[in-house]
Image (tube, rainbow, N blue to C red):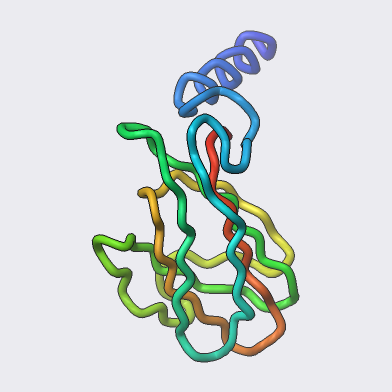
Length: 127
């Protein structure tokens, strides 16, 4: 039974993934760089540029380096994000890494309760 449950979890994770491959920065026709910003107690914007393959979703690897949690509001160059407010929207703890599927050319509004963290955003494809 445990083997079946492990197989189903593995299968579902790969079935839902865009490529079923490990995260690859700027791959499969995407051209993107890593953008970063020192997060402060004032809301700021960070644009994660990528030229994506039409019709494909894009994954973004978000990395918080530092001790402060970072609050992130998500938008795009076509639809600006709302202004981030500490405690609202998506919050990432300090010293963590997450990968998200977001629209191409994501624009992030970021804020922290204090200085001490840098947010890095790398666009690509995969889990």
